[in-house]
Length: 201
Image 1 (cartoon, one colour):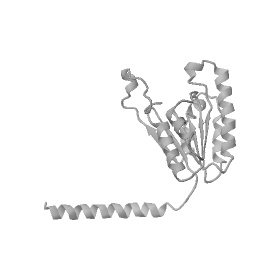
Image 2 (cartoon, one colour):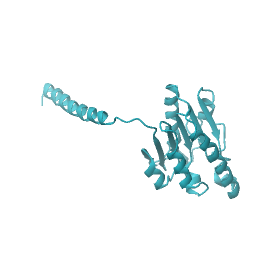
Image 3 (tube, helix red, strand yellow):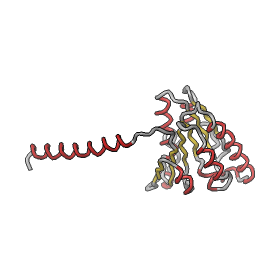
Image 4 (spheres, one colour):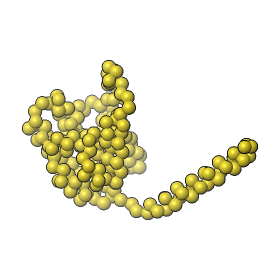
């Protein structure tokens, strides 16, 4: 095959691809608030959500963050985003369950946290809400899944919600517009490497 033929074949292939993509874009004619689930055992669920926060803030959108389970408030993402305009940040947990070891308190904290989330879900001024690690209180039964699904369904029509955490319940995934599962192939922690500032914290 000559260089000219290779160039022509490439151009024809890209033209066919462009036609397919343009047709798909033309079919996507609705606008609505999205429910996005980032789940799976791999690293990067919260990090992906924080990337979308940066994107939203770049568009001048109003963002709310509610972090379940996590009790620390010294992470790099919080230190950065708390200094930005248009963001409200709630740390709703008291640490990982193996740290707290108090079932009734963990349940109470999760339910108090959901009451805060409900107020955000009823507030149309929030364009994007990130519910970080919400899957855990759902999986543990600390929050009622039916109530959570109802509140998510009844939120303002253009409000986007991102939920992160392992083991997202099937009913939650079924109700979502986009679901991404992070796959764990290899992780530095299992090789004895500590969590690193700027990467994990």
